[in-house]
Amino acid sequence: MIDIKFNKRLLVVWLVLASLTLAYLWIDHSLAGTPRASAVITSSVIVIALVKVRIIFREFMEVRQAPALLCRLTDAWVVLMAVALLGCYFIGRTA
Amino acid sequence: MTDLVDKSKPARFVPGQPDMWAFVLFETLVFTAYFGFYLFYRARSPELFLHSQAQLDLRIGVFNTLVLLLSSWSVARCVQSSRAGAYRAALRDVFITAAFAAVFLLLKVFEWARLVRMGNGLDSNDFFTYYFFLTGIHFVHLLIGFVVLGVVVYQLRSPARREQELQENIETCATYWHTVDFLWVLIFALLYVVR
Image (cartoon, rainbow over all chains, first blue to last red):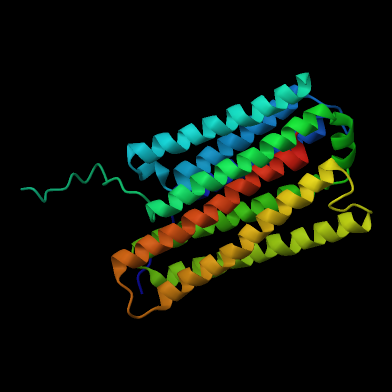
């Protein structure tokens, strides 16, 4: 039976992703239970989620070791999502 | 001399089949469109969305996200184990992944039941239409993920496996699994946390 070394990098990646997830609890706590619309909170939450998506692309999905085309394509997709999500939100606010 | 390999720079490769990447990018675009509509309507009627969102339990959402991230980590380990030829370890990682996914699904059903008992349904209001639609479609993706994990188990157990093909298939399946994970990361942020 072949045994492989424990990959610490993947553990660190998970810890970072988990910390970013737990940051949402802190954001929610800082609002102290008052439900109020906030563009700052919404934008921050979307940016944090997209940072997590990029980390999943790069580390878990091994895009980090992929040809430059796939790296650029996935990065472009993250930017596209950011523009689309924030754009729709802010257009909805002014409509 | 042509077969000299620079050990400091590992060869770059596309993980899995390129077709799966085309699917991932297409699927992401489709979900981005759903999210765009949701955020547009949310920004137009913030009071309704805030009031309905207050009925969700953020702690369940956070827990489920951590569980799904654990499953992704496990699949990533499976890919690496299989690449190193440690097929038994890879098989173990697939079963761990399936166990985390099962926890996610059970909690999701529990959460749906709780919300329905509170009187919410697909046609209650705009927020819950999006909530049940997005979580429902994600649930279906995760169920397909179980079939995908089954393919990985079959491949790892097949005595007639050809290593190159086996590794490519496992990477393809893992790419699908991570996509289901990052789509949840976005769904969770948009339904539970944005204001």
